[in-house]
Amino acid sequence: MTDTLDPAAADIASLSFEAAMGELETIVRRLESGDVSLEESVALYERGHALRGHCEARLAAAQARIEQVSFGADGRPAGTTSFGES
Image (tube, one colour):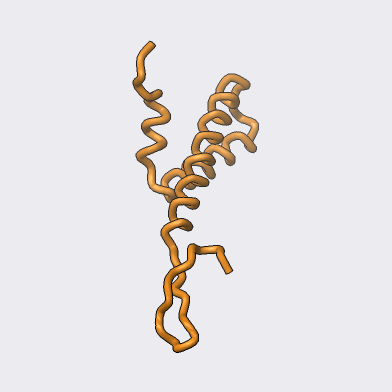
C-alpha cells in the first residue's frame, strides 16, 4: 500500500475556492441535463462531492481567519474575538 494521494484529490486540493465552485456548478449543470451515462453521472457526483467538501473547508478556513476587534469601556482595543462569536 502506498501513501500517495489520489491524483484527483490532489488536483482538487490545489484549486482556489472560486475555481472549485465553478467546476462544481458545471458538474451540477451536466448532471441536471440528464445527458450523461449512469457511470459518468456517478463519477461526476463523486467529484462534485469532493469539490463541495473542499469549498466548505476553504470557507471555514477563511472564516476562522476573520477576527473582530473588541473594545474596552475606555474605547481602546481590548482583544479580538473570532468571527461568529458575540
